[in-house]
Length: 574
Image (tube, rainbow, N blue to C red; front, side):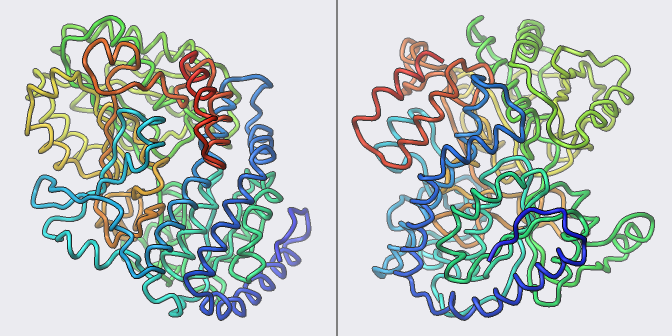
């Protein structure tokens, strides 16, 4: 059963929630009785349904985000909607099959040493398709210091090592920005934790109710999933329902605290005292203020332009409504090319395609930023650039997640090594949240820094660290872990507690480290970089992103060599 979006009185909506949770209480036994083979078959059913619903999914997302027909930005809805669900279900099914056959899910991946006595699992590239379609990109999942490779292998699989041991009924409070998040969170609750799930949709995403119902139909039919809709009152009712034993939240730290501790002075008092209103386990993936650290070097004009578009994408993808959107660019005040880079960045922000401010409260948050920084510059399309943040008193740009197209610039002194050290200290000590941090560096600078760069990556306390790639690539990598840096608590939640995605089902990962090419093809080849990737389709300046995104999603639904030429042809025109 799923509830249809409705304007029913609150009492009727609550009754629908009661029915959904009662059905899940019965479905819990059915899910526990599903062995590994059955669970893999159900995943394969979700994969097939996602492939079938791809076009309807994209249309529903485009409708609520109010994207114009023919806009290249429609590519974002392919690449961040059905595409990661297809890759995620495929990767998770491979892990289930490994367990079926008595193997560890990690057996298909290599493990390598990482700084600080760590072991890392190389999760990207994994297949020949990865090497072709994401040439030059890589990802490793780093485990905490002291965890051995043998421990990683023996513990991978999480709750699927005992699939009959049910963990009860959980609720997923779905996100309202990226349309793959609710489905991927449901799958992780089911497969990593053995919890049946009631998915409460964010009202912004109610238009995807029918699509999600069809995509999750195999799991709904077996009694493991129910979907409900409604406003904040329904959300409060479902998380506090006595039939729910666990809550997973995607959103902001502010919304997390309102749910866990309550609002107003009483909520603040409970948070200070460590006495939550919601007395059940809570995991979360929350936002924060993500920095992009641009390490100084000797760049060409083409490098400056491309990386400025890269940083603009990190802010403006999905209109700026991403938990891991870059909010502050950290540059060296001593970099001879700083002014040229910032000029290209301003131009990239201005020329990116216009789009509606679809996410509730966006205009108010932009106004808040302008009020805090009277010297901020409007650069067109509702976008704001806050130049020359004071390093001593940077203000709310480092501590308030604007969740809107607002980008700040913070200058710190020093050459590459000195600047990097100070930037790492600042990112760890002054920025709110620990979800993701981006680093940009020229290959010659990377070589000159040597082990110091790896040590800096190890020092950064973020759940995803990306070098010459956006941390969003970590989100799109199904086999990578996604979430805050570990160690947060309910009363200091920062960017959340726990991880999601993690299709290899690693036990207790610390972070994901993503690397990408500094230049697109053909400049990458001309400069000796081992990468043949064009401008990525998630760039907001990519002219063919809609076509490339559609083709990539079609390829993920049915990989074939014959599909590659069209993908490459579209991507190279971007």
